[in-house]
Length: 274
Image (tube, rainbow, N blue to C red; front, side, top):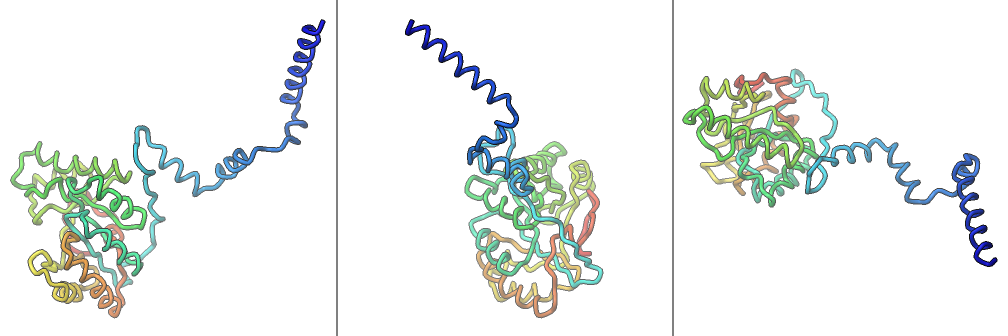
């Protein structure tokens, strides 16, 4: 008798549970758990949604990929634009350089060596993207591309494209041939890879003269529309950046990425300035 009463009570409770679950009025009146409420609110937050989608990379083991800020509208036909570019990184000085550029609200373009993108430096690449800088391909290991076979040349570009895509989630559209060495073979390879060849109008020679004052002085001679060549692997170059930014500020310059300067550069084509 007692066992039968217990079974009957369990059946009644189960039935009530089913009624409550299927009753829309009762469901609406039931308090929503806090975790569920926050999840629903986040679902309609564009910023949270964007971060979630970007981070949901199959097989991605590390931090979520960065989201670049919206494109800027800068008319370099009227503004005094200059594109500061830095080669051969990322390296141990890159973080300090990014701090200086951030404090000055200046954007730049970084031409990266694939072999330099390591566990220790990949955070700098993500930060470049997140802070609105542009990243470009500078080959895998700084080989002179004109002396390579077609297969080796393609590998230099493709490996660097792949590692930057993996750590930062972006496909690079620009490249700078090491030593500025290019020919028809390099032109064809970059065209196939969808990369424009970016040279320079002003070489600060910071690789030769490791003197911050000299480097800043040379950069201060930039003209509107110039692409300026520097290297963030040299501490003296990073030391020169605050001075050269102050000098270019006095001349009313706007610091833009190469793509902002050029508009829509054509794959394979060489560019020295605007």
